[in-house]
Image 1 (cartoon, helix red, strand yellow):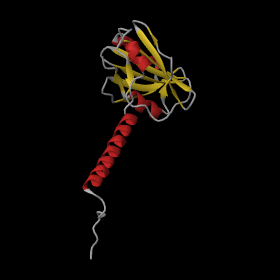
Image 2 (cartoon, one colour):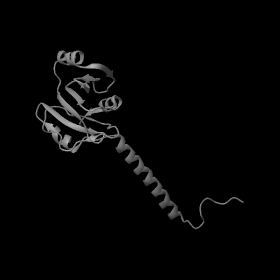
Image 3 (cartoon, rainbow, N blue to C red):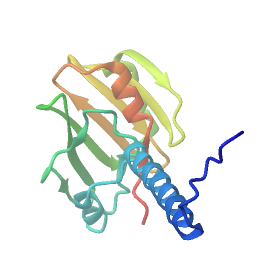
Image 4 (spheres, rainbow, N blue to C red):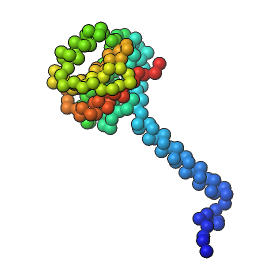
Amino acid sequence: MGRSIRPSHWSKKTWLVAIVCVVAIAIAAIVFASNRLTARPSPELINAQGKTDIQIYYPSNLPEGFSYMNQSVKASTTAIIYTLTYDNDKRLSVSCTAKPSNAAISKFHSQTLTDKTKIPSPEGDLVVGTAYSQTVASLVTDEVWVIMNTTAAIDEESLTRLASSFTPIPN
């Protein structure tokens, strides 16, 4: 004869508590995974957004090993610079400035960047390449020019994934 899966000594209340616990654990796991996949701007960047006329862009998806460097935000009314760290002690500088003329951007892309690749980005024109022996990503939006660069070695795939996830801080 088949045995019931439900132990006979478990009451309906015990079953209900068990089901609620399983659902709560599942929800917690989903929230944890969601928070790991979607980065939030650092509180320092959010605070700086109120002090500058420039829209600040940040990576909505930090690759594994990347993090915000504490107390690295430098803001003025016309620019913001902050630093991300990766591989424990390497630094990636990020600057957001008002978009210059298209001619200035074209000149930078054609005369300064070498070994460049255009990458699809929902925010604007993204180009990854090399300038002055540094790996550089240049994101041009309708109003802002975001430049990411480092003097340390960086995996181009990580930089591309990082740069293509940049999005404006919500106002």
